[in-house]
Length: 299
Image (cartoon, rainbow, N blue to C red):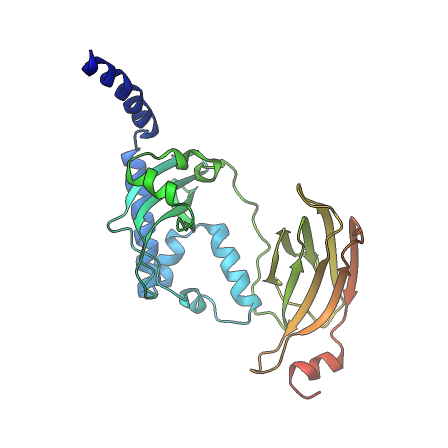
């Protein structure tokens, strides 16, 4: 009788484990794995031709836009990465998901970024898009499990329920094609936004689009700014959990190519705590001779 009771107790646990371990699509896994390895090889060897062949077209445009907006060399600057792309050797595939448009594959294990220290077990989530009948590499995300020890325990035990969240699923949505920048920007600029409790959309010159959610960060202005009139448009809305009256800031800064010259603020919309922000607004600034001299360190 005791054996029978134990069996009944174990049986639902086994069923839960089997349900968590959904079959992995081997063919798809091999395709995505090989695409990533080809992309990684291209980066490691600085092979711009191979990199172009295996990288998703929208990602290539995005990278080209950023590099030229920073007045760097393209495609040379593609390979100026702070760390080498991690190898998948020794990692376990814990999730593979695909639609007719895109795919995601998640690896779990000791991920070594080659920056020193003892590598720990975390998740690497790779994204791909379908183009001309082949999978193209798009991007990588890393889930640091240092503050989620229970998830590490689950994954080590073969329970992959954590991978059932929407973040691991293919969206079946292809991103819109970005504006294409063909030549280096004349002046380098960045949008800085501090917006606790709010979502802020910013456009500079109607082509550099930025979205910030409960953030404090800066992004490069695609195409930079010109000698002509430069426009700034913004839209603001409160996020769930926010009061709509938190302090916030939207700024545009110019950046000099000369070392030691601090960023120059050229436009700002700022709201103090307790004040309700406008839903939307716009502004403009021009590259005056004074600003040009400041960028050169002459004033």
